[in-house]
Length: 155
Picture: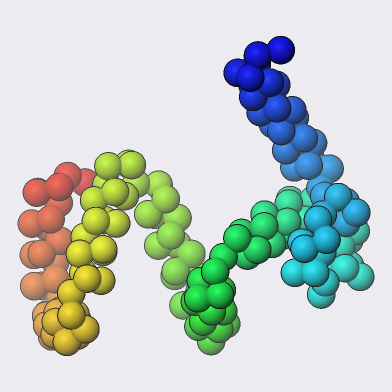
């Protein structure tokens, strides 16, 4: 069998396994030893978890294991900040994420580009921009939104 065919066969097998995992969940024994260490707090109730949740946790454990120590610390910090939010704040963030996810790919890319440019500004310049935005009246903010819509379309 050629290398290309082996690759296609392996990919097809992976898709079949992934499909089965999504439908049936992930058995604790099917997790790698490293994944089981990461998910040790879930071991007692693993079989009670929804199959989709098992799959989500297994993927999360794999991502965690691929992170550098610095990336893991950033993830811990983000999780801590998330835990400190009120239910209303979390709900608002979830809704904004859904709206972002529903944008056309070009608009998401444009927003990511704008955000990257903003994050590369010096901290004092970012603070200045945030303060200037906070000082705008609701009418001024609406005028900016309208200009943006005319320039970039619906969103």
